[in-house]
Image 1 (tube, rainbow, N blue to C red):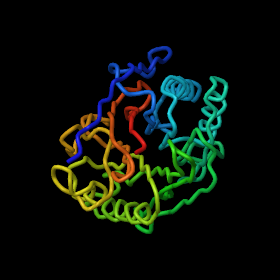
Image 2 (cartoon, rainbow, N blue to C red; image 1 turned 135 degrees about the horizontal axis):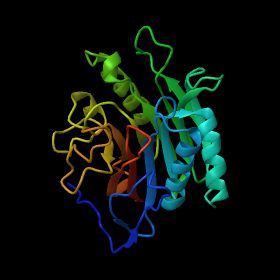
Image 3 (spheres, helix red, strand yellow; image 1 turned 45 degrees about the vertical axis):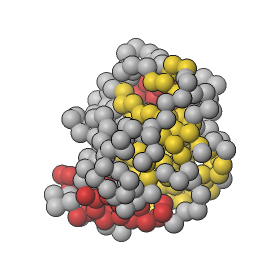
Image 4 (cartoon, rainbow, N blue to C red; image 1 turned 180 degrees about the vertical axis):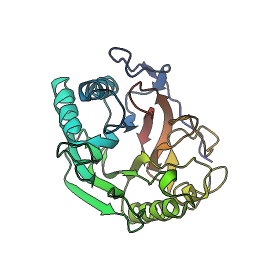
Length: 279
């Protein structure tokens, strides 16, 4: 098993405004690491105003300087504000949005998932899952884009898997995660897969993503930023007392440095930050 890398490092602190998004402590990483972020920002239902949500995400991105960001539960108007805000802070990013619920934010504003990349996106490959919950107008899916990341062209993906209250048996989650694993497994070259999977690392469905080298095994191709030096299927809680948010990277292409979950006052999820090295 490959040990977690902790090279001689500089200390990175995520400085944010107004105490909206609070760092939980310094994370060490070298200047050559690729920085990634996954965030379910609860953009359509949590109570804070759009301006507060957008401002907090802008502060987080401007402080971290990630190569790629995954956003779940984001209103399209919020995404526009985030892109304008980070460009104004000197960290302009390219983006693609995938609609998962039309008019999901009210007032004709659509709701969905998004990928942001520091380098220009050259292609997008969205997929709506075949398995969907009945009686809902939200359609879960996978959004993958092609952009340079680190030293190479990479597929960078986001997904938001169906929640447990719509899937009591777990069948939909198993099928959606299997579909995501199959699609990203077909890509040649490096892959980053981020998102809210609505399952803990130990769940059987997550075995489709983790490699067999992990404690607990797996049949997939991915390491995860919060796995630790023993390659555990574990990590900091990102939603209440559970880990639901993940940053996966293809084990053949990246070495994991570290991961860190950072509380957000306005969302029911934490921001997950990851540091990896493009091998």
